[in-house]
Amino acid sequence: MENKLDNELFNQLGKKIKKLRKDNKIFQQELACILNVTRYHVSNIETGRSGVALSGLYRLCKHFDISADYFLGISEDMNINYSKNNDIAGILRESSYIEIDGVEIGQRDKELVIKSIEHSVEQINALKSMYKIK
Image 1: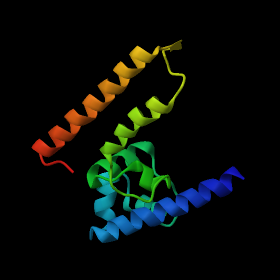
Image 2 (image 1 turned 45 degrees about the vertical axis):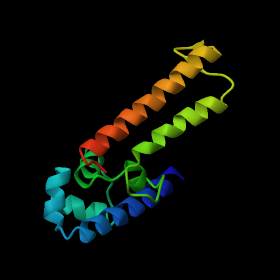
Image 3 (image 1 turned 60 degrees about the vertical axis):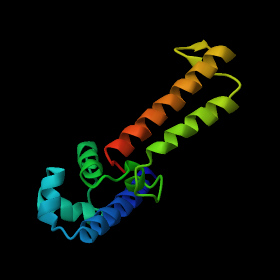
């Protein structure tokens, strides 16, 4: 059962990587350099015969500025969306029980955590805007 799932994931990952490579008009050899593997290994990845090491997935995401969620089949959105972190505040507001390091926090501390998260997201968005980061 697990082998079948692995094969399916490898096939989907390979198709996405091949599409990304072709959309960016790069050769397998160039992608091999990005992933730090051989061109032969890239061919095996694209056909689903091999997977990608975690370090390769990291390099791929960083080089093309694409979310790992896209490659892993968690999301169809290729874009990294940092604003999703703001949803954490909403989740925390709706939670009746929150603990930090195994200790339940009270309502006052919960609000401080939420405000801290919201402030951090605002700061990140301001920096992204200032430096014109997507």
